[in-house]
Amino acid sequence: ALAYFNGSFIQSDEPAVPIDERGHQFGDGVYEVIRIYKGRPFMLDEHLDRLFKSAAAIRLEIGHDGESLKRIIGELTQKSGLSDLDLYVQVTRGIAPRNHLFPVCPASVSMTAKPFREIPAEARATGASVMLHPDERWLNCWIKSLNLLPNILAKQAASDRGCLEAVLVRDGVVTEGTSSNVYMVKDGAIRTAPLSNQILAGITRMAVQRIAHELRIPFIEQSFTPEELRQADEAFITSTTTEVMPVVRFEDGSLIRDGKPGPVGRALYERFRTMTGQD
Ligand code: PLP
Image (cartoon, rainbow, N blue to C red):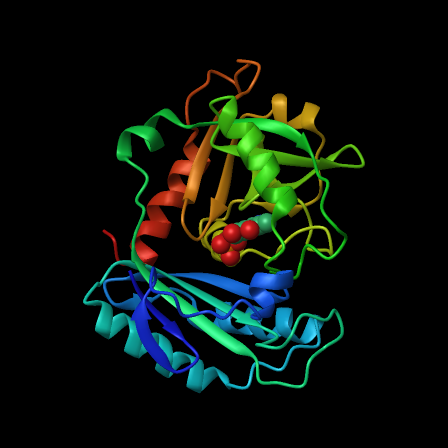
């Protein structure tokens, strides 16, 4: 895939990043995953806002403003020759001999442009299984940090059991997924964890909240327990790459309602496709 690293356009598998890069040494950085539909980035301003918030939270000066990042994103997209792509943006504290303390050096900016990994229509029609897993992450989950070890371990555990996602549980309530936000539907109302330091403020969550408002579906930001999720009428997860994905089953084989995707998730997904110019 085509990539960008500190001013150069390269191939993503070319050696380009020094061993001393702090993303490599410490995971000392933040990132975004942005989807581009037919050449048009979806909610780019919101993604860049979140990137700047994440960077500020770890006292990282990106060294580019939004316009400058947009120019690089535009150039990378154009050079990639792709029109439907997932664009990854990573900013780290730069290149310096390994030492925990902040170095005095410019931040590193890398990006990759890859074709969409589209979820097959059959998988969407079937719906996903999820595994309940303890949320073992730190308490700054609103920062989109490169440090994803707990997320990776939980997602692998889920995958080992044939599940698409691990639904994370902290203090008896569902926080979010390892790379998604989690929702249940009960009596026609959508419920999801409120924004806090315990979850990432998903951009797709923001889109779904707007759509729910438009469709006059109540959107309640209130945490729920795994038991409430089991008793839900329907459930779904959202993220930039899965969009709105129905959840129908748990790792133990138990089903949500009849084990089929529900109407609320479907309505949100249909509207999301229109918003993103897919239909
Ligand atoms: N929560 C976590 C922990 C994530 O990593 C992600 C995305 O990867 C999300 C939620 C969904 O965020 P978005 O909709 O902005 O992709």
